[in-house]
Image (tube, rainbow, N blue to C red; front, top):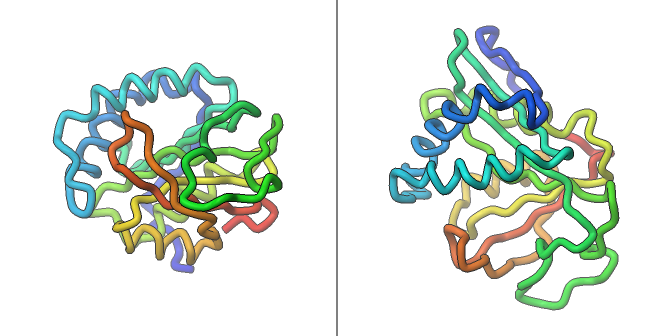
Length: 189
């Protein structure tokens, strides 16, 4: 594992502590995800902002940040899944109950990870994931990745994540399908 550049400052915040970061996170989100392989239309940040504001109100919300000279260059955030979650619905094949059954404190979902393009391949993404998951009380983490985002999938597999299936996205999702990954938190990157 390569060392993180000395100029990068990592931080962790809960929902209340991220109020002043929403604009910067949405701006970076829009920049990161409007480029290949994503090519989502610019301006999705308003939809993203609404979702981020809903998540920030959840007491299980957490956000890791990476800054260089006070400027946000990366973020990762997530929330704990609730027992009645729909996260595991829409799988392309039947999944075992021991994977899909949720209870309080079982799973944290990593919702988004973004690193500014000129700061990639410096260990920042890995450090953000580690910062987000360190100290979490959940037993495991999960995340969703586009099937065609092969570099992203390789990144997560190198961190120890295991693909558990392909799932149909919700009508409001950016993609029709996602590959879901799981990581036991006892095996943090």
